[in-house]
Image (tube, rainbow, N blue to C red; front, top):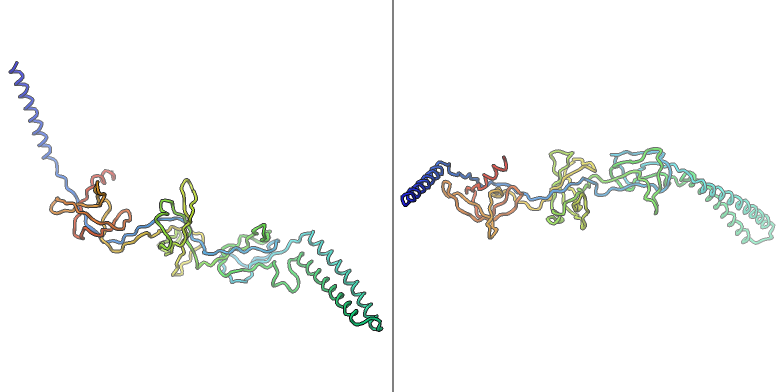
Length: 370
């Protein structure tokens, strides 16, 4: 019995010893882990937020008529430059039958009164010539007759205005002539000859005859997500890229951030505006879609490191890297970081240009790539 136990123990010892030797052999047969290293590079790092929107005129004026009617003539088209006071279109008035009839009746009444006052004046003049009445009575009759003539002329002018929109002597100030109220480029003429138009009044904004704007003063109008609005502020620089204009970047300044957001597709969006600073002759058409890069921070020509090489202490959460002291021998080095663009980060202190930094997560990168 004792002999059997001894034999079993010896066999177990031999198995364990053999397994240990095999493990050590396999361990020594594996290739040692070789870490790659990278060095700092000199770069310009820009931290920015992106907004989408479009290019619009700073001020766009809509020209509307002061009288209803039908477009008779149009003298401009989109793209034309006009000055304040230039003629844009002419309207033909479609008279209201009730107003036209009232104006005609007013003429008849004024004519009857004029004929009556003329007879009275002629009668007073004949009596005055005989010395029956004083001159004051004749003068009163003269004044009444002149007033009747004026009323008759006014009734005829009102009739002409109701019927045609203008009258003799007032053609330059007629409401039927639509003129530009500002100087600039005609962006669009949304009406055609024959279209009916409605006058602008307290109850109706009226039909737009033309839109005029100064295309030398353009703005970017876009929206940013609520996750970005807390990072931006007024007077930050913008870099505007227009999809229709390749290889061009336009500078702008952020001058408006909406105090209230609006929900769009389940996300809160805030409106922003930035004034473009045009320094060349590139023509930007109103309404073109554009993207704006809001420059939050910038560091030019600084030592930069890939963010993937940075590690963070589990307790202090401070950044550090491992630098090579000799062949495949590394030591920890605490560093101070600056501006980051999400790929590269500025190294303010702790490293030199010749230091070799350990690529500690190369295995993870290869697995993600696969």
